[in-house]
Structures are given as C-alpha cells and as structure tokens.
Amino acid sequence: MATDIGSLVANLAVGTGMGAVTVLVHFWGLIFLTYIMSRHGHRLHPHDSHTRRAAVILVVVFGIFVLHTIEIWLYAALYLALGEMRSFEEALYFSTVAFTTVGFGDVVLTPSWRVLSAIEAANGWILFAWSTAFLLTVTTRLKLLEHDWLDRRD
Image (cartoon, rainbow, N blue to C red; front, side, top):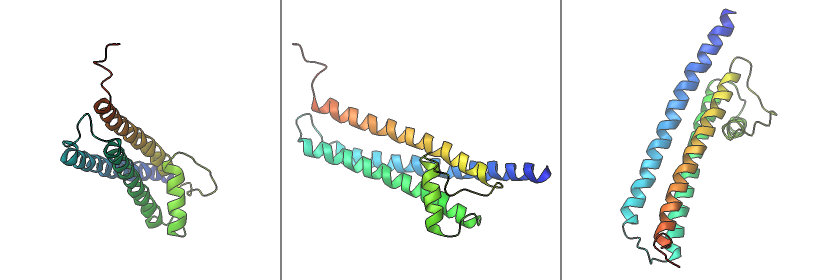
C-alpha cells in the first residue's frame, strides 16, 4: 500500500511539474506570437489584402503547432528519462497519443507511472483549448478588419 501511495504522489508531483512547465512554454509562446502580430499587425488596415491576413493566421497556426510539438517532446523526454520507453520514437509516439487524448493503448506506461499519462492528457486538452481560443480571437480580429458588417445598413 505504501508503494502505491508513493507512486501516486510521485505521479502527481511529476505531473504537476510538467503541467507547470508546459503551461509556461505555452504562455510565453503565445506572448511571443502576440508580440510578432503587434510588431507587424499595426500595418494591417481594413482594406489590406487577404494575403496579408492569411499570412498572419498561418504564422499563428504554425506557431501554435510548434508550441504543442515542444510540449509533446518534453513529455517524451520525461518518459525516456523515467525509463518507461525503450526509444525516443516510442516515447514520442506515446506522448503524442496521450497529449492529443487519442489514447490508442498499443503503447502504455507501467502501472507505477500510468497516472502521469492521464495528467498529460488533461494537460494537452487544456492547452489545445487555450490554443483554440487564441486562434479564434486572432481570426475574429482579422475578420472584423476585413468586413464592415457591424456598421452596414442594408
């Protein structure tokens, strides 16, 4: 019983630490994307080309993709460091499946660390939701610049 409690405490401690690290990576990554948009976004005007707006959205999407990739790789490195996986490819595959909450189940952690994979899934779900909200905000702002639909009187 003491081993089970010790394992659970270790899972929660490591999971909380990784959650904090990935949230900080995500936070600073979104701050950086916001900085890039503010640095170049002040040049966007209501009659600018669709190409410029599309470029901003693509930069944000690729930026978010890079953030999630970094976060998945951090978990993969952790699984490898814990000795839970035989190779980095296996750790990366498992981390991607857990982070995206797909959960195929063909690769699993040992019982002593399986709670950590559930924490990664919850962490990934929250970060994907955050990314979606960020992307929606960016897209909405660019759409408002593109269309004058609030002032239109038909």
